[in-house]
Length: 214
Image (cartoon, rainbow, N blue to C red; front, side, top):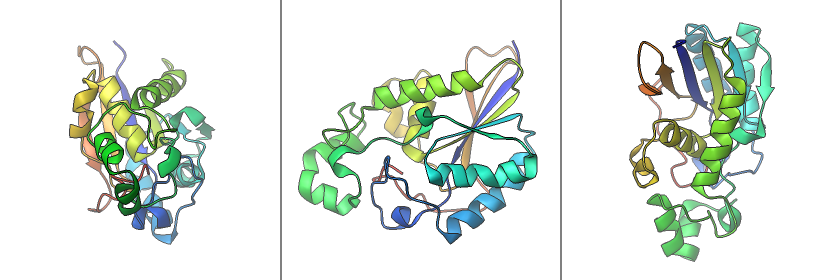
């Protein structure tokens, strides 16, 4: 089997991350800290010898991907399948606001149910399906290391699906700090994908966005 590596790289920090606000499909840019985080991470990711970069279409992911594109000279390919969870009625609100207004649904969703986020948003099963399809579109035989620039919630769904974990266990996958990454590998006579690194980054960072569809 061809040895391949997938690097799931979460975007850098935004103001909404700091505010614990559900970003979802809202197109929030990186703040100054987020830009610096991406710039610090890019040289470390270069050491993995990336052969292709694919990014969510949301600006915070594209800005993060651009930091690696500048030094790798690789073109960033855009795929909307990698965007974050649509948060429905929760989008734009803080975790505290969503707990106050919709406690039972919000807590059940945090616990990992496949209910639509914010009643009118996306289910985890749909997010996993579209995001893994996006990765498969980018992962040709010529690609040895694929950099996937995405979002915290989407990355968790990708990991759960690609590791064949029951959805009831996806909430056990720890979050990704801003501009940090996880690495999946196959090959070496392995069957399927193996998680070899999780929440790696240039500096220790808090994990913002566990309640905010970041």
